[in-house]
Image 1 (spheres, helix red, strand yellow):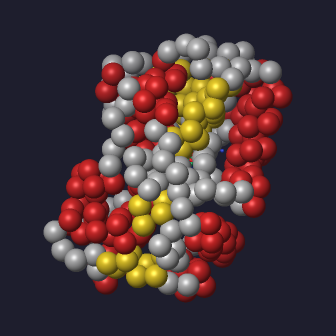
Image 2 (image 1 turned 90 degrees about the horizontal axis):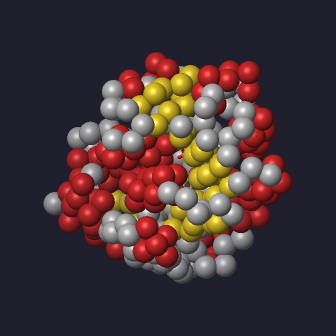
Length: 298
Ligand SMILES: NC(=O)c1ccc[n+]([C@@H]2O[C@H](COP(=O)([O-])OP(=O)(O)OC[C@H]3O[C@@H](n4cnc5c(N)ncnc54)[C@H](OP(=O)(O)O)[C@@H]3O)[C@@H](O)[C@H]2O)c1
């Protein structure tokens, strides 16, 4: 049996949907069963209830599991959550843990300078030391992060970020799900790290132009200072430490400037990379404010 954790979240639910699309049975770990109706409705999905921070809640979720895709939020408890889960999975006899990590596509980015990047590195070291065979998936920024700009797009026809002419190479979560599915259902991936980005390094003005084409109305990029954006994030309800960490992250991206595209994982698994234009067209109603989006910043 294959277990996907974080199955109510953005990347986790996309991977579970990919299993359902292929008709491959899978188990989905959720800590809140009341939010799991969409996952439960998918064919071939066995929903298990448990909390990765509380190993005693994981017995039935881990029973008979050979391979796990480990995902949890990028928040301050990610290190403890995932290290606790690695111990529980290892004790339960899981034979392969695939960790969803992250990478920044910006050249020269130092993972040790940001908490979630640093936590991913620490968890990876812990996973390697656990002795359980491992694989790490390292996607760049999710394209779905731009859903968080929908309120400014709807209200002002603008994307407001402190990025100047920095380029980023965001990836569609559905591409990550396809690569994760391939890694989880075929052999020979132990001890490997698969980095992945979207197919283009784009300035925010170029991203705004693609959203503008998709929604059929003007969308411009407006450069703001990190402090202006931090205050906007606070106003939008981000907790202060998260808003500060984001402002710092964007400042560093802006200082470094250029991103690199890495399609080696797409090519290895025969996945066609989704362009930002195709992603924006598919989600035009989210950028028009007609349908909702999940705000779970990482
Ligand atoms: N955002 C990006 O651009 C980006 C890019 C690359 C990599 N990443 C990485 O992707 C990962 C997930 O991203 P995200 O934060 O955006 O995901 P998310 O959508 O918030 O999903 C995380 C899921 O993990 C579940 N979870 C958290 N703690 C748990 C626990 N103790 N027990 C059981 N389930 C638990 C959450 O459950 P609930 O639904 O109950 O809260 C949620 O469904 C993070 O590690 C992040 O660093 C993000």
